[in-house]
Length: 380
Ligand code: HEM
Image (cartoon, rainbow, N blue to C red; front, side, top):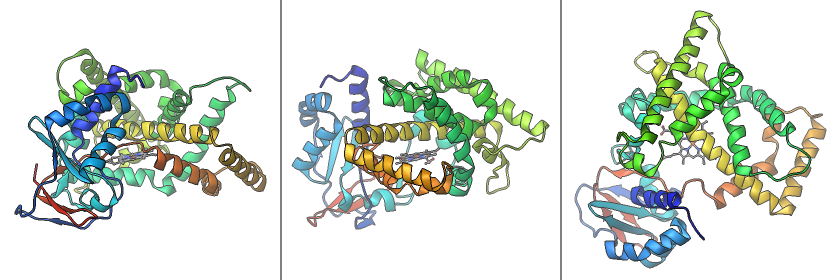
């Protein structure tokens, strides 16, 4: 398999930054300030260099499987001055999910998102403000709120697919990316953006998204063209969001979108969210939601198209439900599509969106493998 150089860099970046890889939480974990057990086995620089061809030709999953088979479920990759410990599998992944922020934190791995999302939210602010922000996200996206987004989503989907011909060839990933951007702009940002300036918004968002590349990840503030475009686009997008917020306030207009929910949110200390913070949160939401949803939709489509039995089951289920509800679709009707739901979950399980999650050990962490061996992962 020929991988483009960009992909190879991305793969390398993922390997470089992945401090702890895990799949399901379930381990016995304790946090101990004193090192009494051995550290995990180390994959040294020479072994890593030997693995580079595998990494470049077969990808990170094959490389990790090789290391897992050789070293077991806990091993450390040591690159220059960085130690990166991988936790693979359910038996050892507890620290990741059970550890508090003072034990395993997001560290500064996400520094590159600061110029993307701005200075007033995300990883630019203190942890209590960030917790408030996560609460705003949860409130804005909880099922009772999502109910009101089904109609606008349907309208987007019907308009979009209504333009498809009866036969033809499409790139599923491009199609889902586009439709999800339309849905995101309508449901998150609202009709001002969707109906008037979708094209401009799309271009600006794409320029911000381009800030997620290997160089910007390592040196987020270096003045290279891609970073300059990212910064300009964020400033412009913030202006657009600010204008919308102001015009809603002036006209006393209240909308049903996520922008409105974020605008009406209050931090624990009673402060209102600022225009820049709302803009940053919206960019972060689209960033977190669009790619993941597009990828899982594409995999679901690809898997169904190659597994006729399940495709038939999904289509028949939809026909049956549509017959029952006389073509009416709402949130509850969607929930009844259990076969489709299972297919989406299975497509996501077999093709995980993220091959790893990253945390920084703030304390020494003891991990026990299923064979009963205990390792002490030192504080970063
Ligand atoms: C199949 C779809 C999705 C998957 C598999 C997924 C997966 C994840 C994972 C694994 C994380 C945690 C990352 C970490 O802790 O390092 C995360 C965080 C997040 N996701 Fe999703 N996600 C999906 C869809 C969405 C959607 C649709 C939205 C919003 C519209 C969203 C918003 C977020 C946000 C805001 C965070 C970060 C919270 C924070 O600030 O820490 N995600 N997602």
